[in-house]
Amino acid sequence: MIDKLIEYNIIKTGEFILKSGELSHFYVNLKEIISYPSLHKEICENLIEKIKINTNTDLICGTPYGAVPFTSYISIVKDIPMLFLRKEQKTYGTKKLLEGLYKKKQRVILLEDVITTGNSVIQTAEKLEQEGLIIV
Image (cartoon, rainbow, N blue to C red; front, side, top):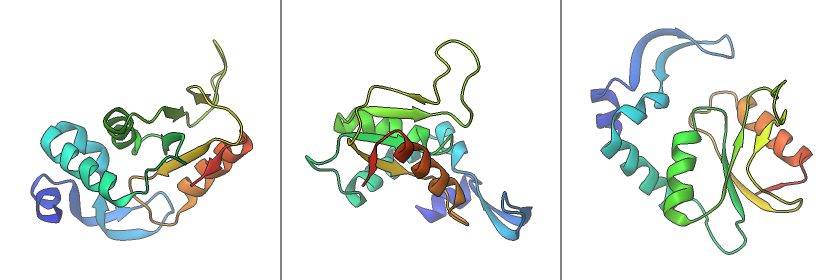
């Protein structure tokens, strides 16, 4: 799979400034996976094998926005309701930060596409926990 990610230029080499401000000689842009349906499916199927989906899992959510395509696939294939977290709360309409149906104390699988410092996934987990959800 790594070879395919390199071949499709999803894993890039060079010099890149990351969100954290750190310099990296590699950059993984998994958002581009949506352009390669068969590879997208392969990655999602591998994720399904790795994560613990059981009767104690109520919901699935991906960090905004890179993990959303993976979360959406897994939600459909495994019949797990999905939540969609926005980066910022809307100032119009329903003004929701979190879309989807949920109840406090429901158990949520949280997916992240790429982790460097872990800040995005920590912030996402905190937002879900503020809604009364339990990250599993």
